[in-house]
Amino acid sequence: MTTVGQVTGPSEEVAAGSPPDLAVKVEGLTKRYGELFAVRDLDLVVPRGAIFGLIGPNGAGKSTTFLALASLLTPTSGKVEIAGCDPATDPRGVRGKLGYMPDVMGVYDNLRVHEYLAFFAGAYRVPRTAWPALIDGLLELVDLSGKREAMVDSLSRGMKQRLSLARALVHDPEVLVLDEPASGLDPRARVELRELLVELRAMGKTVVVSSHILAELEEMCTEVAIMEAGRLLAVGTPRSIGDQLGGGRTIRVRLAGGEVQEHAVVTEGDQQALLARLVAEGLPVVEFTETSSGLEDLFLRITKGVVQ
Ligand SMILES: Nc1ncnc2c1ncn2[C@@H]1O[C@H](COP(=O)(O)OP(=O)(O)OP(=O)(O)O)[C@@H](O)[C@H]1O
Ligand SMILES: [Mg+2]
Image (cartoon, rainbow, N blue to C red):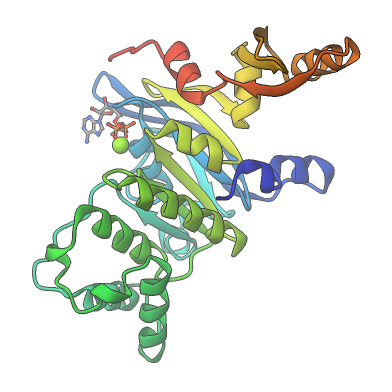
């Protein structure tokens, strides 16, 4: 299993190098429905090569934000750019660069799995001669080769999710915007999805993903943004969000002989200092484990369940 620890954070790369190379830029994005602000003055930047997670409770504005990124919704105000392309003035350019996986898949009554992908390959003007290899490759990538001839409607929900992801990849986009891709997947399929997203990142793609599966985003994402009621509450690496918001963690220390201690720390610096102190005191430490830094805990604490 790949963890964030094995993935170099793009924000660090950007900080060390030349000006940031952005896959997605959102400035002051606002979408109003009458009195209701689905998204309110949202600013986001996603560096190229990130796996960026958008987290929020139901109604937070995640899907609305993604629709604006995909050029499928006109903002009330504000601006969006995908790899330097503005959906308002160049929707075709944006659609070439972006693969969008909606939260619900449409119904395609009379199509087989390979016909479904061929339909979208045609819609994205992929040359017909490239279809067979493309479709075989995508089906293998999402582990649906065995369902090539199956009717789309006969697939299980998780399989439909995977087919939908394959569809988003049909034109080899630079940026993937995936609205709750893990929803409906069983635990094994979730792990596989996570591995697939890490693989897509290694192929040079930027992935923007929303989810309620907070623990999974924490492991996979290089950065996360937390949204509620249309507003951004926090953005950063999963760990820095904890630090920004004063999200304390508990360190469980077990000593040889079985004694267990619990220490509250706030920052990573505190954690290092604690370990150094225990070692300097000559204590026989056999276990030093973080027991509560979960994004889930943090999320529950910082989102107040505001309903508009
Ligand atoms: N077409 C619409 N007309 C009116 N209100 C809308 C419309 N689309 C979204 N909204 C409202 O905007 C808010 C944000 O909705 P959105 O679908 O973006 O949330 P979400 O974060 O994706 O939620 P979920 O986790 O349930 O998918 C909600 O209050 C929703 O009712
Ligand atoms: Mg949604």
